Amino acid sequence: MAVAFVVAVSVPNFGFILSLMGAFTTMLISFILPVAFFLYACGAELSNLAKAANYGIVLVGFVGMVVGVQSTLAENAR
Image (cartoon, rainbow, N blue to C red; front, side):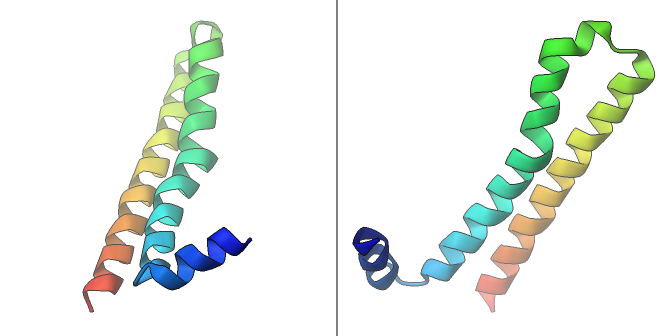
């Protein structure tokens, strides 16, 4: 806990770093990686419609990641 405090106090604009990491990792962990692992493990057994739905979820995850990172960068530019 003390290390986190020292880092938060010593790094200027630490909130920006946390926002950027959150925008990137939230979509990666929530949408992209679970579906990618599922497709890797069970992709051969899925129908084309199921594969398309899963790829759509991955696409939504990437779009959300890009929007989140762009929003964080725009917020920091102000």
